[in-house]
Image (tube, rainbow, N blue to C red; front, side):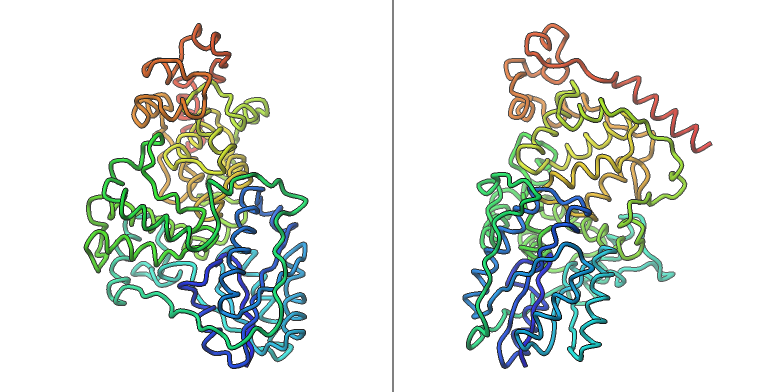
Length: 475
């Protein structure tokens, strides 16, 4: 049997359930395939940073597969609608008897996969699909009433119980090297003409080995202090693994097992233990929580509020203020630093994601979907579940969201998480000469001297405006 392995958001050789099984089932070789879908990617708000990162990792994957005598073929179609026929043609051309892939959880992706399965089965070609994107597959962590958890804390407790009852998790067997390649590999495109190609290779190098190096360095050098340093954007206190997890260059199971080993535990229990390892495990499981919700509540993939009662909330429209937010010219230094970090690096510190999201949805009272879309178009780690979950949390429209009356004060947050102003100095250099007190909210003369704009909104008054708007809407 010759197998066809379809890669999507699982761009790795190690701990890949579908690839492992495809290589062990095959006796006439394996053909791998990746499908480039520019039109669909644009509809899903993929931006240049993510496309560039994905393509560079596809190239690294091709090199890794070559060592296993597995050629990687590249198909290009514009939309998901064209994927079934393109894949089926490739399977016939390469004489493959069975298709293998790891399931994706987003609504359009699941529809595409259903169509692929129907097309293959109608042509007499078997399909084997695997659950690989999560540590525990959606549907295994449910309430006593067999419902979906919508609050993280009880989800976390049940997750730990299910995980431990199953004996934890193991990594998929290493893929088997094939006797010979059935065909040649295709060249991987270095860029697509409809997407910008940012130069982020030094910041986000491609390849499974680079992701694993980051994990090892984090566990060795920073995880012990993670709980103390994770909220400080001016420090290198996080794992910086989110792009690799989003593209599937490293598996969440490998990350979890490394964290558990570093914390000296082989069980999860009902709650994460104290210290850095336990805190980072919680972040991995927040990712799981948001992934599971995509299956439980498909509307999250369709631009809808999780809490439907907010569907008629009247958000403000102010293109000028929104443009200032996007450009990092709001006059609020921590907000501008974060937005400029996003523009220049394709990434933003997680605490700052919450600060800028609350600023947009509460202080500016603008629709969270505007911010969600802007993030997706600029993030190298753009991921629907996590991005949507974070934005709806900040907007108070989501699951387990921040109450509408709890609104970050960006200036207070800045003083708390970046007391010396190191983060602001790094990304808003015109304020670099200010002292650590005034840099968080420069006085008018200092702003004028630095050619830095006044704040586009009064932070305290806009906070009260948001509280009043939400309260009156709920009443």
